[in-house]
Image 1 (cartoon, rainbow, N blue to C red):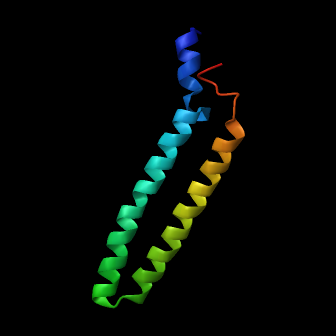
Image 2 (tube, rainbow, N blue to C red):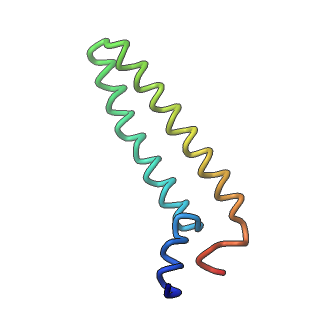
Length: 80
């Protein structure tokens, strides 16, 4: 296996890959905001609860990714 392919496979465990995962996870907050706005306009409690659960999921995902980013520290796969 070439060096470039092995680096590409390690992207997911790199700082850049983690930042990309954080950005895509945070982008889900846009849809949650739209869902909350729609639920409030329609007085739909079930949709509002669904939006709250989804928001908690996003926050949890970001916290996990942040922890992984801190663990990577200096032993970054792409820079090693």
